[in-house]
Image 1 (cartoon, rainbow, N blue to C red):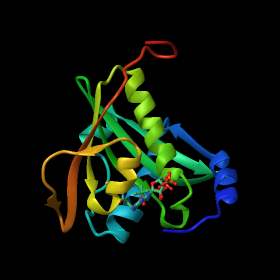
Image 2 (image 1 turned 180 degrees about the vertical axis):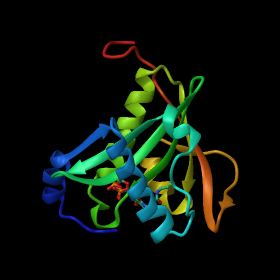
Image 3 (image 1 turned 120 degrees about the horizontal axis):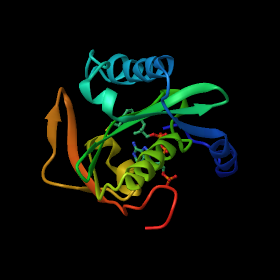
Image 4 (image 1 turned 45 degrees about the vertical axis):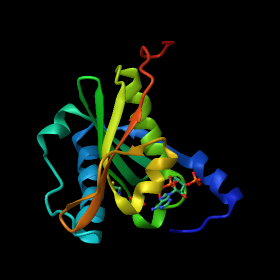
Length: 164
Ligand code: COA
């Protein structure tokens, strides 16, 4: 992971913006980042676009100085928020982008009334998700050639824009 001095890190964090995807052009940027990370870097899958859930989920982009640097998706199923496709482009890792994406997805899910968040973590990223309050459920498993672990975290559902 890129190492960044603490002071540089906090300056950097102020420059990270996470925004919901609103246009088809922005959705194409999501697919481009998925492709860069999950296809060309990890060889996990070549199919990164137009999943049925994409149309009924919140997709976000993380931006630094006008550059799209990361993405993530959350889908609601009843009171469960399923998080997937979290990816930060390699040169931008270790600066708080992944955390900013996750915090945005979790906040949105809580505003929608979700009570639990689940995800299939690649096990190399377990510590990243642990730091965000997720705990492993059951045993690791393989998806493609990459070991994964189901994780979950309880949420605090709250009314949009207000108190619980
Ligand atoms: N192992 C251990 N700790 C990690 C970690 C890792 N692989 N990745 C991040 N962390 C820690 C950071 O040190 C930081 O800790 P701190 O808050 O105590 O300083 C915290 O998690 C947040 O890190 P952040 O800088 O926000 O993470 P990131 O922007 O580098 O994004 C990933 C993390 C996993 C999203 C990114 O590495 C990535 O896109 N990897 C490739 C795709 C992938 O594996 N996605 C996950 C699919 S399940």
